[in-house]
Length: 419
Image 1: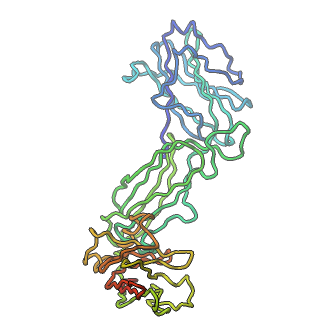
Image 2: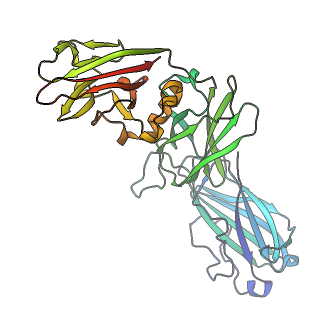
């Protein structure tokens, strides 16, 4: 998908041109400043002039003059890195009135040659020849750059519900990882570089399409460099999607005249329900507590022995005075994380009906600062959303708390749901 750029050349009347005639010859390949330094001919800022164009890119140029009847022709003169030069197009005048500029204008096109090496220095002269022999020149220098590029990283998508790509339901959050202009540079350094020069990106936009429905833009971010960059984008499976429908997320990088895109898809399914509930579980702490009841393995549903590997000990208890603290274990890795559902959201209905997808979504939305390894002042009916060892999600409800005082045994009773 291409968007043509436009350079606008405004030309004064013929009388002024007689005093401002360009004096270079067409075979002069020495880079010079623009001939029209007096400001009577200029390229507007309405559509920016860029210093980089891609091989094969088509550029529209708008030539304006107040004396169109005096124009003999318009020529495009190209200089290729001082290696060769010449007229690449001669266009007959065909001016029409432009309401915006209030002048007679004509659009001509220039195509950047194909097959040119990246970073090649180029020059284009737009020459307006008049019937009396005078001419007007506007000069643009640029480097050949790569068109924008976008790809997924080695891990294209992270499914925040902890399930694989085949188990994504409406409302689920997917994080896509993108690489823009891989290995690219934005400008050529003074010392030179073998890295590819890329067009400057101005934005990254993302779209969603449900089934055969229309594609809808769902977000964007501004960019201002052609250098290599990585981006992660969170998208949500639309609630309008129904099981069996395919949802496509398309990511498009824009570089004024050109774009690049990549698409990821999922087929929507019904939310996953917790298939098991384990009740009457407990962990203890304090002097005299059974050493084989101090830690709990959420995957097996059993207490871990004191001699068991730390990696299998997902939960353990501690206390201070009358405050009981629930801790995530797994040794120094601490890969299990806990989020306590806020009181305003904690209801019997949530615990009884929440799906794996809903638990995973709320856990992710809580953010890393709330996904902790230690929660104090645990009370009966507290509900915890737990991600076990960086993988599956579980939902735990406290059914009993006995604080240990004066060295007595503390105990926490609970039940929890899992797949």
